[in-house]
Image 1: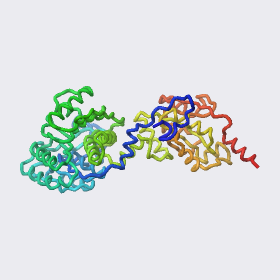
Image 2: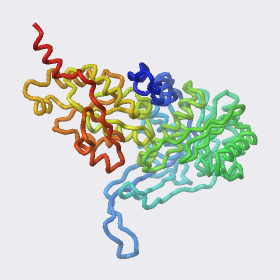
Image 3: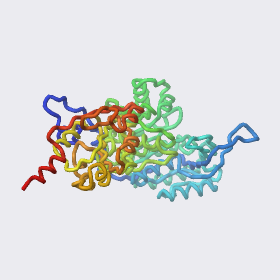
Image 4: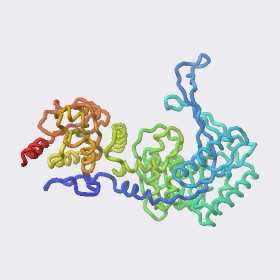
Length: 512
């Protein structure tokens, strides 16, 4: 797709000019368009159920009892963790998920069921075991930083009685579902014998099984369709160090062959993800750069999004690409918040350059610019009144657009134009001018501003390139000092002679 057109001409490149470089990744565009084809599915989520507690506050003093900070706790929030969070992720993706797991017979179990209900999830697949506590992880937080985590759990295997009860639920519910997700946190619920029974039953019913694994051996997952280990888990299960992409692939292929697993989707932290399918070349998916607040729940998001997309009609490689986008969004959240379909759609829309309204306020413009910058896109900014848009304006904007990946245009409001041009201007009001500019392929965002200069917009958007039309020296241009601070450049584009709004107005006046 040509930069500057989003599916049309190349923005008016003159003869002899090199064609502009690619604008948006075609794969992102196709993925965004296919989101509406995704069919909701019903999934059985089996695994270790966890209640996450977040205690928030500030540390402003040191304890007199020990050299530690004192957290003045001002908030307590409960969220779903483990397999419960996987089920909640499916719900955010508009899929049905029945959670099967074990809790204690205690107050934390009641709180867990309450949070499940708040997320629209059924509790009919939960078993209460009075001999075990409900697994609970308490995190003390201050200024979005985790200070301490306290775990309450028993990791020994569940009793044979609890295992039999769980299998009875699974046998009853599995025929109604499209597939199975096994979320293993190695907390004792998923015994080897239970896993064997579940995988055997699923294969007999032709229900795909996806596993988020744990442990030093993946033998207990023999025969599943897809497994989603992180790099550390991959190294442990294969017995191989994986410092390079080739070693990652070798470890994944070894595990797949040894345990009759059809595909391995490896999550590799800063290196993104990689998919290795039986009989196919490996596919890598680079990480999408984000400001990382918390990696909690990223693996849950990957397994849920991948499974929902694959069972919903995507090829595995497309499902992996979607999961990679979602994981990038998850780590920008605090806690295992999960990522919804609408959030994924907005993110892909920004990546693909579609779906976002062009006329935006300053807050939205800043958000879009921040997202583009994180993803390595070059932002161009220009501004003006653009009253009675003519050929000279269009050629100027096309040239500006070819200097980067997105063109943000600051548009003087009606009151601002009056102050600059006099009481008889503008000829066209700000609504009409904004919509005419937004209709141009070479303009990506239009932001109205009231001030005499666009300095506030420049500071908010922080463009890589500031474009000014006319005959100026750099030091005369508003924002040149600010651009220098963050390493931006200024480009001066001469206007085309014989094209001006003033000239058009005079010609109209002279006409009989």
